[in-house]
Structures are given as C-alpha cells and as structure tokens.
Length: 122
Image 1 (cartoon, rainbow, N blue to C red):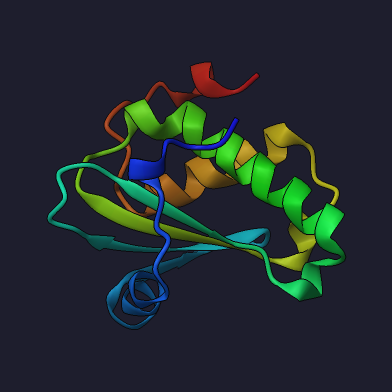
Image 2 (image 1 turned 90 degrees about the horizontal axis):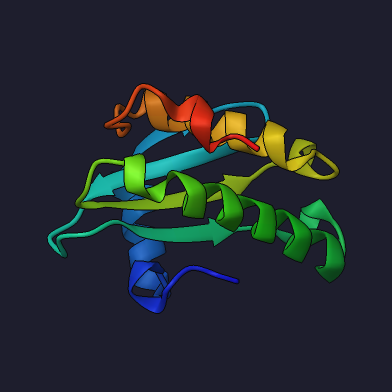
C-alpha cells in the first residue's frame, strides 16, 4: 500500500525545485532534500535510479522507503516537501536498517516532533 495521493510529489518541477533550493541531508544509504511548502501537510517523493538495478530491485527499495515514511509520517513536522533519493548501498538492506536511516535523516533535518521514534521500528 502506497502513500495517499495528496502526500505524494508527482511533478518534475517539484523535484527540481527541491533539488535546487532545498536543504540536503546525506547518509550512506540515501539522501533527503527538504524544503517548506505552503500546502499545510507534508508531501513525499522517492527517487530510485537505474543504477540501483532492474525494476524489481528499484521497486523493492521504493516500497521500503514508502513503508518507512508511512510509519514515521505522524511524528514529522508539518508543511515540508521531502524527496528521498536511494543510493546503491540501500539495495538489499532490511526494513529496519532503512527505517533507522530515515529516522536519522529526519532528525538531522530537525523534522521530528517526537523523540520516541523507536516505537516506529518493527
């Protein structure tokens, strides 16, 4: 199950705006571009490029990223656009590793409202 449509970034202009004007936070498995929006809720975009592997591999990584964000979404500050770009090191990682990395990146970006995010982890 993916994210609701209103929580997704779809237009290439939005991805480009975040790449050019958003703040970037990096970890070994992924990076996050974040910028405020005027929508009143967070919107998320996921980038899994061809260098990750074939479509099956890319879709698996994308599903893991979406599951991590879906679990963490209620604990994030509101009013931001976020693009998560997977690095090749993310391929083959379990959900818990992906979730921990997403939590670390959201903490770096100062987007967490709840410090008790360990309850999100499976």
